[in-house]
Image (tube, rainbow, N blue to C red; front, side, top):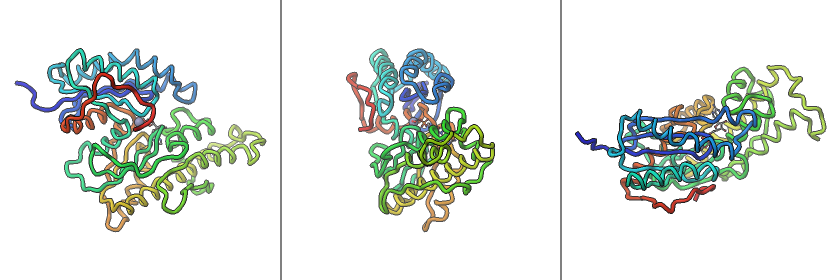
Length: 346
Ligand code: KG4
Ligand code: ZN
């Protein structure tokens, strides 16, 4: 019998994960395959674009073939190919975009272009049937920190974003300062669990009383000064610090970043009268952030519903791409073979 659901093959190569997934009707995950490049970038302490691009080229077709096999789906059952074509590293995006365009042409399937950040937001809603609107969505990743006014999957309205470093970038850079392993977010979280979040009062940059933008470069610099002295001429004290001192710095840094994320989300929720808060992006895997946002939602008047992306869909994946594409499919919003990758969001 023919499969009557709408099956979308999603592809994601915006940074350092080569991912493909088959999702039915926007929420039934038939397969999700992710080839992570963490090991390749580890020794550089960050993603090296050319290495990422080469690894995507090697992995893209095996990952797509695996996603199709795991979903037990043939190309005949696929209704569209979805690709995250922005924002991200151009040399990485181009690999997924080329693969998606090739499959779209060879299989004669429509092509759907997806904004990677809007897809992150979608991953918070995978299991939600009855979303109460309006919602404020907080997307915190390695490349972006954004607040959206969310009223429909197709046009989330940007309320504010970072004016310098993204939250995940700050975690990664502070982990490097503290000599913690890459990727920094999970290392900081693990180390912070043994530290005192009130040990050091790092700055909380709020950028004015009604701003919904973020700035995290100041706190990163504050950690650096704390470790090297105000004039940066002092000896780097990290190597001589005790494990407890490192844990206290990690915990105090994490608390300051979370404090700002929560206050700004609360500010945005008040501004638009949000009934629901959505949380997604790599940093959404952080347990302290998840708990703090839960507390904020419970203590709000009236309380707000909180939807957080399941942990396996917080960091980059293709399920979120295929899930969002379902809404574009239903709205008839298709791309053509002139689709290009774009480094920044439009
Ligand atoms: O969404 P994502 O996979 O990639 C981008 O689109 O950027 O996010 C990756 C970011 C990295 O900066 C990583 O350090 C951070 O998410 N991250 C975390 C945690 N897990 C990943 N940050 C804080 N706590 C975590 N548990
Ligand atoms: Zn991402």
